[in-house]
Image (cartoon, rainbow, N blue to C red; front, side, top):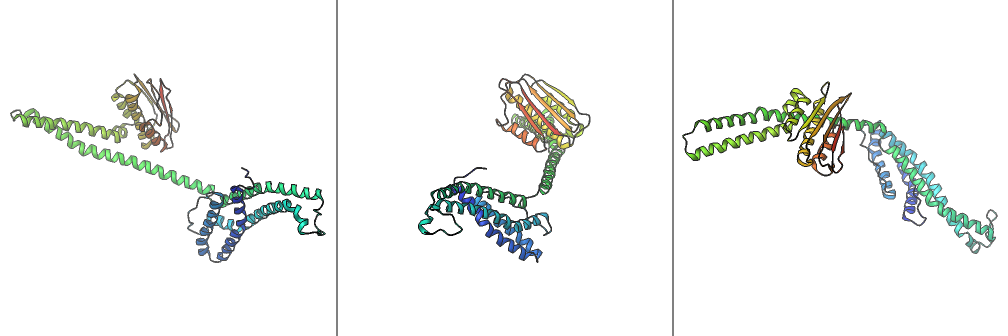
Length: 386
């Protein structure tokens, strides 16, 4: 806990928070008790009371207490915790205010005690004789000690008040756990839906546009081979159209393969990665040891991880060879991509590896990159199988 000087703004803000606490807490506790006879009104009023307290903590302490969703019923645990805080807060705030006020007040009395004889010539029976230098000195020392102690007490009482508020006004661990579980399920559903949509697009393009382009290219090729007696401009136009149709077909196939290769659905990760390794512009040693297939989403993430890694190696690593190892260990799928290139790769150096890391994290996987300057580079990926 950082200790503030008696004259610092922090000390006065802590003091103001503690001293305003009893008034605000007492008013809110009274309103809570008044509305207790009407549960619907209490359910609507308690969140407003909580916002008042949250604004007080933000104004004086700069502390943000995250809001909780409005409860659907006054019987919800969050509502009862808020009610409990508003009823307990006067006790906590009152105790803190009493201690802090006593420290500041005692410091004022002690530091000004030497002047008392000037205003009160004859000491009262129940007071010390401050005309005595020793008594006056003790008074002054006690006042100085309380002056130094008051900011510490104000900070401690404010921190205690904040701790109680966080414990009772924030989400409970059970609620946070359920929320995390819900978000995890929602994210998994979104990832699965996106992967299913990619497979649907791939299937539609493969069965629709790609087949029509194949037919167009075949017809143009047939016309190019048989219609030899056409004028030269017409033959040149047919030849150009044929070449462009073949190029469009190649680009469409590459696009479809990038979306979701059909072989991944039909034959699994081993066959799909074999095709990627065969098309790589450098020698790739591939080893796949998977006894049984993982979920389609994890297979897609593993496929695109290896595919993107080999693409980056071909573009940037200046490597002469690469190795890819895929194995399943229990409920984990582990990938290792190695190359003997120049190294120096980082997750921040480009969008490729950063995109891979984001895709892997979306399914609760991890990526570790080791790439010293001069090489080699190793990418280790750990994925859940389901």
